[in-house]
Structure formats: structure tokens, C-alpha cells
Length: 113
Ligand code: AMP
Ligand code: ZN
Image (tube, rainbow, N blue to C red; front, side):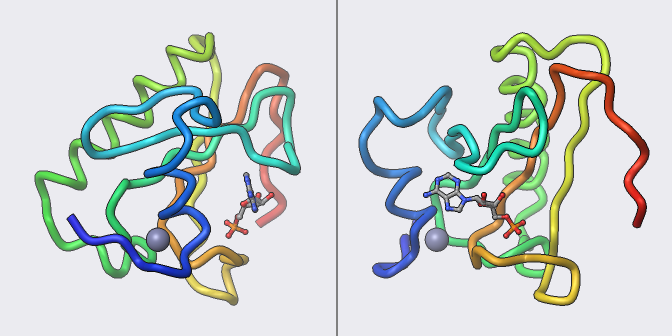
């Protein structure tokens, strides 16, 4: 498992457990600092992966997807909830460490794009 020294989400995911709302061996979840919905959690791998274009291990990919669902249920999202991944600058990726936005806790409108 490889972390990147100057990566914000590497340090959050492998850092202070009190900042996390959920974690297991491979993934961690924490609240987005600028929530775009009543509930807005970020789920990230503990190892440094840039985005989905760099996720090559099928076992890890499956584990991450199941982690996303587990986090959603753990924070009380059961009915309707959304997962979003921005891959690359032109898709709105700002933080260069793979993260799944988990959104819910309210009626969600269709995304414009
Ligand atoms: P993206 O645009 O997909 O790269 O999303 C990056 C997300 O990370 C944004 O929704 C930010 O609000 C969120 N974010 C940035 N810094 C932090 C931080 N220190 N703790 C929690 N969320 C953060
Ligand atoms: Zn990282």
C-alpha cells in the first residue's frame, strides 16, 4: 500500500481516526468540507490512486464500490442516494486522489451534466 507524501487525502485517510466517519483496511470516509447536499461524504482508498483511470486492481475496485455502499448505509442513507466521481480537470477533479462523492439526505435533482 503506497501513500503519496504531499497528498491531502492520503494524509486524511491514514491520519487522525476522529476525522473519519468510517474506515476499513482499504478505504476511509470523511465529511466533505463544502457539502453539496444535506449529507456529503467522501470515500477514498487508503493507498494513493489518482482517479478511476488509474484504478487497475479489480479486487480493490470491487472492495471500494462495496465500501461506498457500506458508508452510505452507515451514515443513514438507505432510500435514494448518489455516487459521483470526477476524473480529470475537465470533469471537475480538483483533488488528485480518487474519491467517491456520496450525496443524499434530501431530494436530489438530476445533475445538469
Ligand atoms: P473534486 O472536485 O471531485 O476533486 O472534489 C474535491 C472535494 O474535496 C470537494 O468537494 C471539496 O469540498 C473537498 N475537500 C477539499 N479539501 C477537503 C478537506 N480538507 N476535507 C474534506 N473535504 C475536502
Ligand atoms: Zn493520495
